[in-house]
Image (cartoon, rainbow, N blue to C red):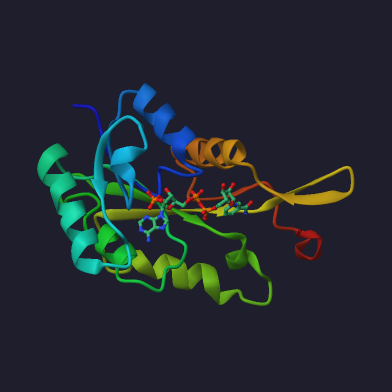
Length: 181
Ligand SMILES: NC(=O)c1ccc[n+]([C@@H]2O[C@H](COP(=O)([O-])OP(=O)(O)OC[C@H]3O[C@@H](n4cnc5c(N)ncnc54)[C@H](OP(=O)(O)O)[C@@H]3O)[C@@H](O)[C@H]2O)c1
């Protein structure tokens, strides 16, 4: 059976990734506040990740409808929420582990804060069925000018990480840190 792929925040900069994974034959579940109005492939579950009960109910409805989560890709504006852990708890099963791609903003690459990547990874601590991967969104320097990534670059970079199953990757660059926009 095609893998069940759940995307949190797939209606924004990850929409291109959602389209590509659906094109690969994945069974998509999209969780965000307005997923049902985005016109993207897959089943939509409208929920705000600040509302733990609603978000958990959306995840459980997605699993009830399409089975265990084989692959999750998640963009949360902050990880200081219960939602990222609730998601990690639902990735994979004892019979077949799953993968969780955590999409992270450039702040986790701040050399003055080497703790941030480890803190982010803690979302999967003690969950043997959830294999965590991290994708850091960096920036680009072109003709001497720094800029943030476009949606297309972000979807493409996260898609590459998923397809190549990269444990850790950076889209664009995070060094030199002083060059960021
Ligand atoms: N390093 C970089 O270069 C970098 C990093 C980050 C962002 N950006 C750029 O900045 C732009 C804006 O970024 P963005 O952070 O607003 O991301 P975005 O992906 O454009 O939008 C946020 C996504 O998260 C969902 N979402 C937001 N709040 C939510 C909530 N409370 N509960 C559930 N889902 C929620 C949104 O869907 P709903 O509206 O349906 O809830 C949407 O799918 C992007 O277009 C991107 O190109 C660049």
